[in-house]
Image (cartoon, rainbow, N blue to C red; front, side, top):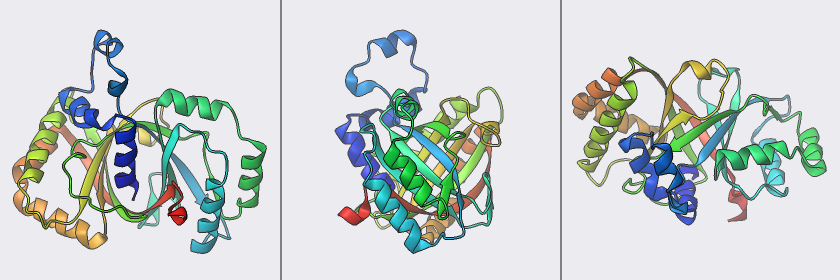
Length: 276
């Protein structure tokens, strides 16, 4: 599962201890604080999304083969997770019939360096071989800082190579939108603390722009992602929050106006789940 394995890797990178702190305390360390940070305090992982166009040969079997062969390439060591997302609706922000390839890197600098090195001959051959299956727009990829404010306490449980993602696209209502969002996140975490142990497995993340992202994505201030093991679990979670989370929702509404939820089926791409 994307988020579970992501969390495990972030532990190895000594990053997870900051995920809640950085978001709730402000996402705004001073330069002096940043310069004195230890190796374990360098910030959240950097995530990139690419919009991809399925070709005439796109199906579950050919896509799986494509991803398997991608895993056999000499991938940059700074890349520690990748996932694919297939929207349930026919159209999404990327356009009609698009799917998405998501990358997780140790840092933006590491990602930029990897892209700057250009494609290897092996990568170019792989891309050409599978261009009738899927082509991705790497040039217009989008970059984000990925915050998981409840990672250390959530109930995700055992990893899985498939899950569902419910995305909300959000715009601040005013200059104090971020500050109000931080208050809302803190209240939402308290709401989660008070949920019963038998709630559907759930994890969430907030994605903040890092870099010059293209439209229509740049017109949104942040993206809120809810992750569940199944669509039934998502339905249960949303219904429970509608019934019990009115005060928290009011805090979110004061912070930002959001579109969604926009559901997708999500798949682990890297590390290769078939190698387990």
